[in-house]
Length: 371
Image (cartoon, rainbow, N blue to C red; front, side):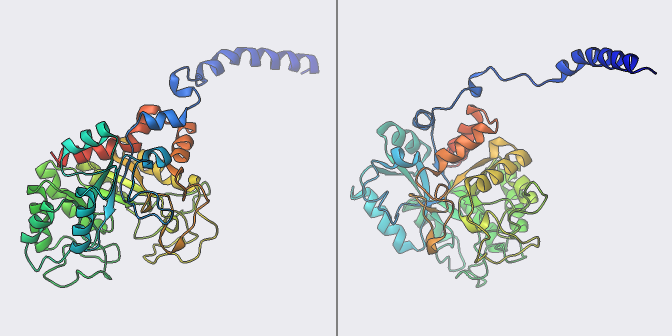
């Protein structure tokens, strides 16, 4: 075959292939979603819910004056962990007396509308390690009367609720599922229209509670966690800790119509270990970044759907964390959620889906339960 003939044949084959190549090309989006995102305007126009965020920031962002929280962080509503009934009493008094300015305690679905209308920061009281039950569910109604609206079933083996008359289920470092007392508590929480949270619970406890919740058509939450099985581009686990949520637990939450909040707490977003490890990592190879965080959000969105994932600081309003845990200077800053949303938008997430992740998913669950 002559050189000229081979050249002519190559040209003919190339030209003949052009139409099929063009037919397979992905068209460039021409919708509004492809345009640059005005992030400040987008946050002004969107509702942002943070699953677990403390308003006692070292920088003083938050209490006693919440007037600039929305402008500085974008957050409209946040759950705050209260460690005791005394703390519950104190925070209730601070809000209801007006000592905390620009804040509203969320007791019912109506309070979300009132907070937005009055441009107030909405506070949801949350117990992670529950207050003493003394073997009965009676006390829960008293806590409900004081404004407690989110109740976690179990924390872990090191909390104060390991006695038989207090233990409700298994934490991430335990193996047992929901206990008989736990089943009574779940029923009471549903009766009182309180949000059931399972952030620190093991997979079996999540499944047990989800089975009950599904029958009652009640959505449940894991309001601060990270994805156990997310991997980096080399196929290595990013953060394979038992504290992070398993795929089975993700699907259990989805089955109730609930929501999973991805936490910005740096130690659980990345590590070098390939083994399932229940310990808190003490040293990171390098600080967790916005990209690390986004990988967890993206994993959950792709695993169970964009309707079931949200944001959660698991730290302070200003983005800082207990024990001085550091991220990249952005993920642990007041502007963290804007940075995350910009990254997700660049990855192709639509504005509508971003607004679900930013707050509509949590808001849907809260409105449904606190009706």
